[in-house]
Image (cartoon, rainbow, N blue to C red):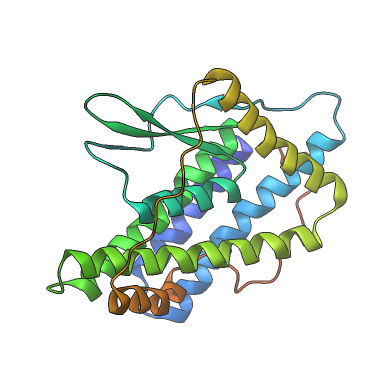
Length: 239
């Protein structure tokens, strides 16, 4: 089993443990341990690449779309995808046709896999919280509730990113930044006609948005454990 397969297997077991656990504290610890494993893997791999003559991976466009829509991509989902993609060193874009819009991902294969794993996890938590707390309150309330959730997720991811950068070695940071910039370059090279669109205004129903912001802290992202850059596995643990 390769290093990334081993990490993903362990992370999925921790997620399953979190889902099955009735104790919110123990479930949060399981999710935190999962995020710590993911960040350990990315940072240790970046450290190895920094001391190697050649990079172990190059960015490519993922073969399958992340999501497809027959109408516009919801604003809350645009914010969520953008935040997670940046957190895991990927670039994303919307491929539009006459019948649908697809969200597509560009990045190093291991980064894309980790991004997809966390996207599925966080989105399922947003769906679960919206079903639980928005039932019977109408579409506008639920849409605003989701926006409140993802705004807090975005804020927490930015805080985690800042903490990781403060504790990581300079060589690992250079390689991580390089992976994200290379993904963006591959996207531009492959799709030169893509134009940057203006951000869609985030119109919200106040009560739903504020309820989402309040509940956003319930989404497990992993910052409750100590910084994941401490005690990184050595080069021998990376394939």
